[in-house]
Length: 100
Image (tube, rainbow, N blue to C red; front, top):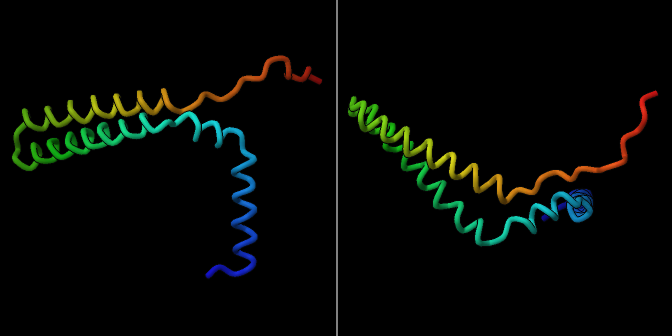
């Protein structure tokens, strides 16, 4: 159970999040299709790290290099998907104030 003070703070946080345009825009921009796709990149990144560590434990440079390449490519792909689904900050034109 939350105390009255905690409930008020939680309500204030919810109101602030609802009022925040950037937060709402981010939630709208992240559609379900993109979220379904992200787990695949995360799994590939984890597999690459696993292969890299296995190569290091087995003292095999070839396996470690393959793990590095898999992890690097999966990380790049994951970052690319995240960049496409995260909205860019709005630029305001004509609101610059003159220097004093």
